[in-house]
Length: 546
Figure (cartoon, rainbow, N blue to C red):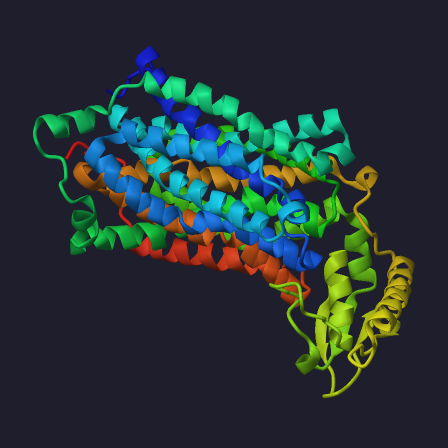
């Protein structure tokens, strides 16, 4: 089998499983790429920082339920078969995504709009929780020995290709409609396009046959009658599930979401790079990095899965901080230079400072500290905190310039608004004098450098993601494989990875340090490296028929 070539039948298996998964990831990532527009249309009843965090939380909500989707559809996949189950998941995903394009905005129906949006996100998350395990298991069970890493790496490219496709559709739509029309209503069109993609994907998948391994299990009467019990009540298998999560998928997930999603959020939301340019730069990085997923999948058949996955986690943990510092200097050189030349410091009594998060849109943020920090948070400017004596009026230091804030608690609404406007104008003037830009100037963006950094982040993604499907399939017995591999994958990617943009952005908003959110993926990737190194065994030569 070592010389086995990919024939038409194999290509149909890989292509059929992959095309549906591309479509599902396209659906899922549209939301993440359009988070800024989602904030404006569905969370306009709260302040800007809170609205963006809410938009990311709604994005993360789909990830929160993915492990439950893994349990529901993993069980069905071990009972019904791989093919039938991922047909159902794709249908659910497609319909719920199409419906997002039809939802009324907050301005039209109030709080019903975000509730409906989150409901659809939950359906998407449940469906995606069942999709991946089925597609990966299906392809791996068709692959000849010694080629599982290569075959399943094509499935691994689908997430990146789906994101790439979503970015291309967004860019084309935005360019055709113009920025204003796209912001008002054109952002809905990429969601509505999913109806066409759903039809094509269903047609392709209906032509596939069931996995030969599952067919053999049915013929021999060896299919599991209680997949959940056998997968998680059995101590030996449960130990493998826990190790797969802690020693593989948690680190893989944070590296994946940092390289593909947090980098996008960082460029657009924190560095204030134009949205269209951000998408173009990320798309270029994805185009360069995606073939490495296939390369590392193939290489894992030669040297093993474990050294490649753990190597990616270690590189990410060691280099994220310098890479994102370099990304800042390349994407917004004026901001980087001003931060070095005239750093911003908020000097305030910590007791008077609140976290800039307003879940119900009622918080006033009227203390002198909150007035200063809310302005800096909205402007996306980096700052550090310095404690002042209790009761001291907060002030903002911009290099050698000190700008006292004011306490708005005793002011009526009109006077507070007038004072805030005047203070913010004064702060804007001081920041402008120190060289702080209101946004990144597209003409000064070092595009080759940004693309190179994004490509490096994508190569890390390829290292951890290319071999992961094959390794998870090889860790578990055939009768309960769909259930067993789906849960650690989706806890890792749904919880550790899916909540990364929300958690990291909230950490930045709370600390004022635009790099502070990187501690989240650095710590998780580092822990995965240590656990995986000592407790995970190599699997590339495992027999997956048993």
